[in-house]
Image 1 (cartoon, each protein chain N blue to C red):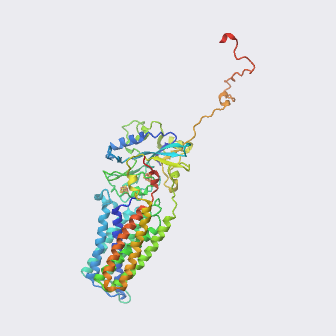
Image 2 (spheres, rainbow over the protein chains, first blue to last red; image 1 turned 135 degrees about the horizontal axis):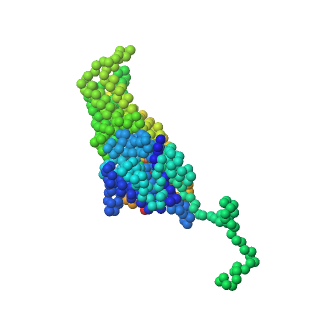
Length: 243
Length: 328
Ligand code: SF4
Ligand code: SF4
């Protein structure tokens, strides 16, 4: 069983909104119809987005950290939004675990958005149907694209590579490694929705180097000589000419 | 949550319709065993069913205003295996159809005897339709209540009290209307209906106060910490990714102050329970003025129920709100 997902590294995200912009650009130009904005240049611009980047301040001044937090549908493995849908418009694909909305069946009753604890679904005010992240299902299987391009628009746009994409059920995939080795976690685990998307936590990135790491005291290949250690009493210059 | 008027009218109107039908059939079953005087088929049962249908149709119309794409509404009957909303979509028309047939059978006095009880009591078509309708009325209450009670993230709703209160509040308003209707159509039943209406109203008060107490003591399961997975006790949101609001800020916030919400509680407790109970009691003693007492009782109770339903939605605090606390 495949479960495609995003893994988002909060340690790297700089909050530039490139993923938001590229997501909107790709998905608004697609076959499923535009993701329309209201008052785009007016006082209270608003519109439909699949992905948003939020910012949180952790800690108290002066010891604060700014955390940028990209947020989209997490493609839950046990998605509470799917069984409540009265029309069957919301469904989870067996073959790759992507949760999708069939815009031709949706009646816009908004019930699924009530059933998602993450606020990942948004009604399109013009098409009057429910919309949400599709994991770029129209990109990732497009054989007309190169392998490199067959990844979600947000992943392609991220300048810091904070977004990884892959199959979390394949233990050898890049995302599984990241989850295992960098402490990947799920949002709101208390509801048992088992989100497929994971987040990688902030970590301390100070580099500490001890002397023996420079001197290579263990000298594994027996090639390195020890650095010369002149006696403290010795003159530091060989003779006056070496100036 | 943001209370939508379409849903407020849907749930309160069909509640009245269901309650009224249950009241009519209660009177018919009592009469079957000669515990109450028999009533005129046309003037009482057929007219009563028509009145119930008016409320049910009103609710159905209101529900369409909730949909973005009402022209596709038929699709919503397909997922009855998993969705309570889908089940409601099936049961509501089935119930309306049964009420319609019940009314027609009474109107045309079309009462073929289908079975006879040991005491020689004839079970005719209207009784069978009444039993079917009663089952469907309760099924509809359960579907409506479960639409809200099954959402485990909305903890204010995720309790059996939600379903119980839908049954009791719908029943109370329906019986109050039945009492008012009988003041016109069958004056000898006023005390019967008003008595039951008062009893159900008091039971409703107990159920609603129980849920108010329960909800006041709820501790949120999700916190900002679990929402973004950072364990620090002090986290403040600085942006939510949009300046002019979004679907998430419009659909899940009621936009009123906590004080306003608290004060509403007293208003609906007064209007749904206290005033109608007093008026029902007065109608039972002062039978000449019963009609005016009962009309006021029903009107006050219905307006109270609108407030109650608004409060019911507004009080539910969705965990997604944790992600939408600050615009800047
Ligand atoms: S994040 Fe929300 S919309 Fe996405 S699968 Fe999970 S419950 Fe459904
Ligand atoms: S809004 Fe659309 S996708 Fe969501 S529950 Fe209603 S019909 Fe299903």
